[in-house]
Amino acid sequence: MATVSGVNYTKQTNTPADMVLPRDSHGRVRVMYDTYEASAVASGSTIQLFKIPVDARVLDFKIWHDALGSSSTLAFGDSGDVDRLHAATASSSASIMIPLIAAINTMAGYTYTAETVLSLTTGGASITGTIHVQLTYVVD
Image (cartoon, rainbow, N blue to C red; front, side, top):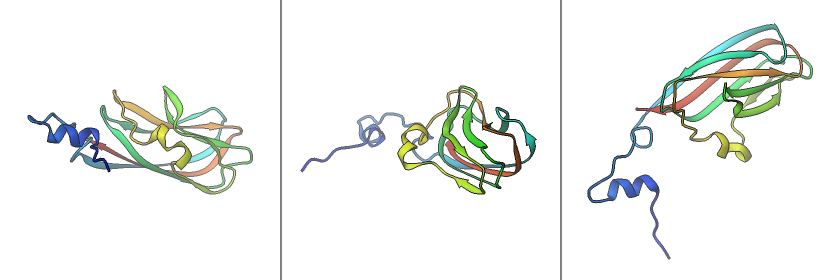
C-alpha cells in the first residue's frame, strides 16, 4: 500500500519548506450576505451582490428565494461567466440553491485573481420576490 501526499502537505514538509498561500492553509474564512427585493426585474438583468477580494477562494454558497415567477431562472457568477458558481436554475417555486455535487468541480475552490463583483443573472421571465444569498470564502 502506498503513502502519497497532497500538494500543500508536500510544500510544508519539504526541506526547506515551501510557502503555502494563506488561502490554502490557515486562511481566514469569511462570509458575505446580501438580500434583494425584486419587483418586476426583467429577464436578462444582473443583480450585483458581492465585491470579492483578489486571491479569495470560494468555498460555498447558499441562495434561497421566494417563488419569483413562472418560467424564471437565476444563475450565479461574475461578469466573466454568469454561471461560474451555479448554472441557471428554475426559480418559479420557493427554493434553496446550493452547489450541486455533479457540478462542484466547476465552483469549489474557484480562486479570483482580481477583485470581482459576484452577481445573479435573471432569465426566462421577469421576477418578483425576495432573494437571500450567503457566500463563504477564504482569503489571507
